[in-house]
Length: 176
Picture 1 (cartoon, rainbow, N blue to C red):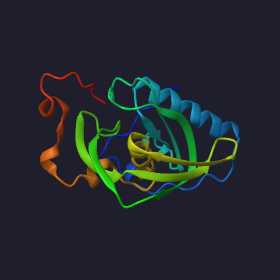
Picture 2 (spheres, helix red, strand yellow):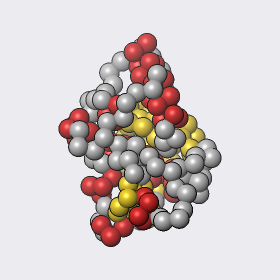
Picture 3 (tube, helix red, strand yellow):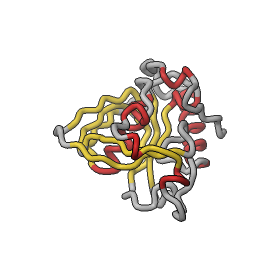
Picture 4 (cartoon, helix red, strand yellow):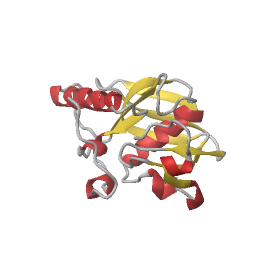
């Protein structure tokens, strides 16, 4: 089922999500199916449970030929529960980000270039991966939602933050 995505300003997006305690339950599988359907419907690169009003430490992400991110490399579809993210170096890179909870806007955000993330899938099986580039960016963006952080809070230069149509006139960049 496609769920409504909360928008910036909704206080539920600022709350810290709580860990999932039971895996492989019908309720968890239903949540994950709804998150997947919602993300796909909106051409998102990822979605965190708090974005649909569920205060659990659950994210889904994945990118293949996404019209919102036409230059992005593929990112494997992943269910990541109770994630732990560890930068592999202090090297940062800046890039444009958007968010389904911040529709119509884009901003340049610094993120760690490479990281290791750990967590669990829907059945409770361990996940342990290394990611870099866009994959690492997506993981950091989605996991930020679990701590009540939206990407505009990470923008350092507000001359590189604004409405898509004003920032990129005459370019076909899809709205969120």
